Length: 318
Image: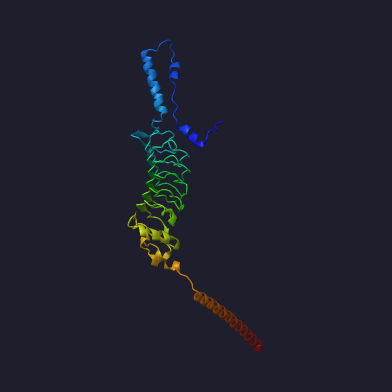
C-alpha cells in the first residue's frame, strides 16, 4: 500500500522513469562484444525511450512546436492524456470536451496560456490550477458554465486575462470567485445570463483595466446600486463596454444603459420614514377601518330596510 502523501504521489506521477543501460543490452540476442551496427540500433532505441519518457512526445491529433501544443478543432471528447512537460501554450479550443479531470495540469508547471473556448464544459474541478502558478491567460468562452464558484480560480494568482463570455447559462458569480487575483487586468463576463453581480467579486481586483459585462439580462434594482456606483468611480481607469450593458428590469428602467443610471435613479432605495410618517399611516389606517365599519353598517341597514319593504309590499298585494 502506498503511504506517500498526496503531493509526493503527484510528483512521482510526473517523474520520468529512465531505462537502465543494462536492460537494453540484456535484450540483445548475441553473445560476446556487440557489433557496431547493433550498437547503433541499441543507442537509437535507448534515445527513443528516453525521449518518450521525458514527456516530450506530442499527443495524437495535436501539433507541437516551440512549447505550443495545438489540439484545437479535432472533435475531442476528452483532454489528451500526455503532453510535453514544458508546454507553455495549450489550445483545446473548438472541441466537444465536457470535463477536465482533477489534477490534469499538475505536471505542466510552465503553462502560460490555456484555451478551452467553444467546448461543452459545465464546471472545472477544484484545485485545477494548484500547480499552474505561471498561468496568465485563460479562455473559457463559449461553454456551458452555469456558475463561477469560489474555488474555480483558487491558487491561480498569476492570471492576467480571464474570458468567461458567451456562457448563456452563467447565472451566478460567487462573491469570492476572483479573490487573490491581484494581477488580473482583463475580465470578460459578457453575453451570459447574469442578472446580478456582487460588488465584492470585483472590488478585490486592483489591477483591473478592462471589464466586459454587456449582453447580460441585468436587473437594475436596489441591489445593483453598490456595483454601479463602484463602476462609475472606476470608469476612467477601467474600460467597459458601456454601450452594450443594458437593464432588462425593472420595467421603469428597461432598456436603459447600465452606466446611465445615477444616484437619482436609486433615490427610492433610500427613502426612510419618520415618526410623523408612521403616525400618519396609522391614522389613515384607523380612518379607513372606521369608514369600512360604517359602510358595512349602512349597507346592512339598507339591506334590512329593503327586505322589510319588499315583505310589506307582498302582504299588501295578498
